[in-house]
Length: 318
Ligand SMILES: Cc1cc2nc3c(=O)[nH]c(=O)nc-3n(C[C@H](O)[C@H](O)[C@H](O)COP(=O)(O)OP(=O)(O)OC[C@H]3O[C@@H](n4cnc5c(N)ncnc54)[C@H](O)[C@@H]3O)c2cc1C
Ligand code: FES
Image (cartoon, rainbow, N blue to C red; front, side, top):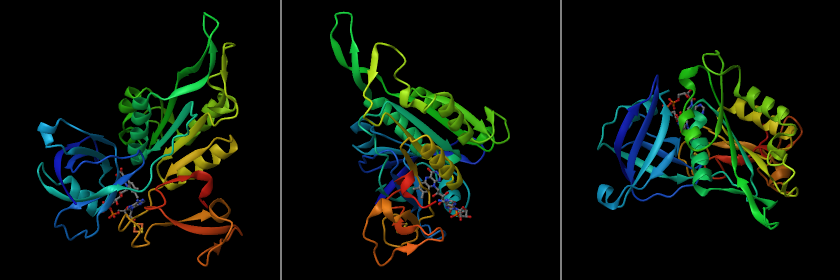
């Protein structure tokens, strides 16, 4: 499929915001597209980019097409080639691909964790949650003595990290979506000096068992205890995702991570994006392709492009 460059904006340093006019596209936050300039032979293979947002301008503006937005960092040939395109240039475009973040029905607090260029799917999720106007279900006695079933809006707390302040992206977008945003940089040029996972950990520690109890505290509020009230949703470099998974496990909070493995095709044909997952979390019947990892834990291999890129953090054999 083909799409056309609608606009290209250099944000700062090597970061670009690019829009494509594509045939009508509907996506789930976490899904991605494969893109390369049409006719480009070097690189020959397209590259993967998370969908940041999709807009549907009026039919007159785009003839019913959608405008798909991505945010990327120029690191090699593929991203350089994209950053040199002009409005109207054609690209080979495939998507949406993969799965998206699963939104638990009873979610009360979304803890969003983004590292560097991992921020686009996290922003997409925040904007989706804001638009969906997710509500916390429970009960509250009103002035008339009647109980209502909806007691509040979903709370979003975002943790955004980068090496320097130039690598901290989309803070304004997350705030606009209604999230409280905490920032960390490794060089301390903005926010907390250190890792974004420090912020997540200290937030959970100070909230005493995390946001699981965040909607309580008022004598009038009762949040259903049997449900899954808060969840972590993360995207970023692999070591960051691993650290987030460990923290979530320690605080017993469900956690989904979007894994950015290197990809060839994006739809399950090349086997270039396998990641090890825990057999026990996948199936009780080991297949011929299963292996026993060094840790002694049975491992099954999954495709990041087809089975992911979003995985339950505890499913991955880190
Ligand atoms: C599902 C998914 C979503 C992604 N979303 C985004 C996004 O929204 N914005 C963005 O900037 N990037 C994103 N990426 C990463 C992006 O695909 C790579 O940055 C891109 O392929 C680099 O292409 P290149 O030709 O410029 O660099 P290359 O020349 O291909 O690579 C340059 C260097 O980066 C390494 N590298 C390439 N891809 C990856 C990767 N996925 N993870 C770690 N190291 C890698 C290579 O090994 C090499 O050392 C995503 C990747 C996946 C799988
Ligand atoms: S990228 Fe080809 S199988 Fe996943």
